[in-house]
Amino acid sequence: MGKEGTVLILCFYIISCSAIYVSAQTCDDTAGNFKPGSPYDKNRRLINSTLASNITSHNGWVNGSIGLGPNIVYNMGMCSPGAGPDSCSSWCN
Image 1 (tube, rainbow, N blue to C red):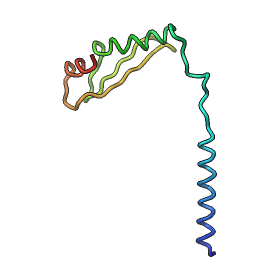
Image 2: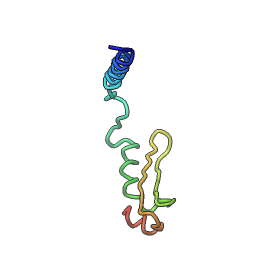
Image 3: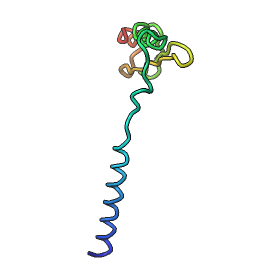
Image 4: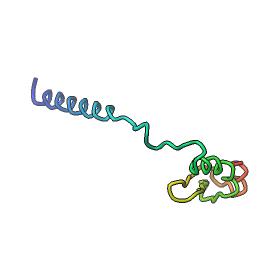
C-alpha cells in the first residue's frame, strides 16, 4: 500500500466519521410546536383562507403574512410565469 492508498483510507475514515456525526443529530420534539386554538394556530388557519385576497405577485411568486410578533405566519407559493395577479389570486383560492 503506497502513499495514495493511505490517503484514500484516511479520506474514507474522515468522511465516515462526519456522516455518523451528522446523522446523530436529532430534532427537539418540544420546541417549535403550538397549541391548538392559540393565536398562532388561528393565524395559520386564517392565512390559508385569505391568501388569495392578500397576495402580491412578483415574477410568478405569491406571498402573504398575517399576525404580529411571535404569532406571525408566512405563506408562499409560485404561479405560472407570466400569470397576472388575478390568475394567481384565482389559483390560490
